[in-house]
Length: 239
Image (cartoon, rainbow, N blue to C red; front, side):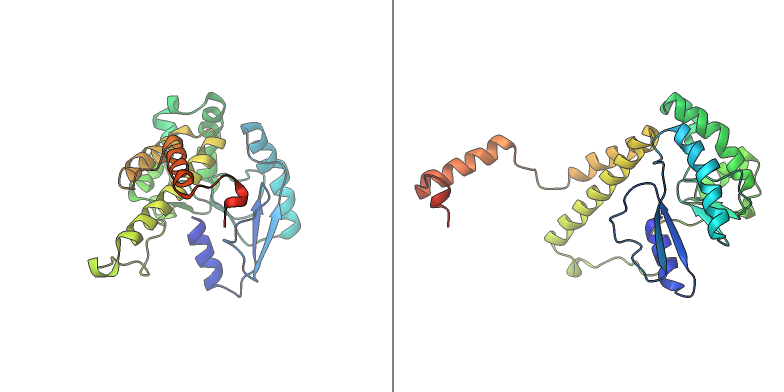
């Protein structure tokens, strides 16, 4: 979703974008001249804070800045705002397997998401399966739901065996692990273990194809061997 939004911003320099963050935003995903970033309190860390943010803070912000459209990357909308809104709803697994999510979050998602879906001008999701599921479960016209599969576009094409080295493969796998760890961290903070656990499972599979990491004991043994071989006696011996 971040890449999709960044591409939209890059392709439309004539449009002014405003990014709302619930924490200090240090990443450079949206560092474009046509972007203004706003840190909005409170942080989305609890269903009660979700309601305060979406139904009190966000309507005030939207009235003040008067955007033509508000896009929510985490499916939340403001029911009290008259601004046109589009949520990105990744899936509705919490409807089918409510036991996989904490009770307080389950209550929030199951109460509000169907209302968000009906209020939305359009809905974005990331697979044909989710599109059909949202349309069927919430009785939404499927023509109002767009499948915007993340990261899939004409810029991506497979590399030949001659174009990729073993080091390239390792770096790619390490990036896949890193991005999934970040996703798992965010989902865990939001108490969405139904989304965090698949990310963690994918990490476990990917790591099987990476070189084994040295244990702390193995690192200490290597250091001890180097010290013994070089006769180093302390920091002063390092050069």
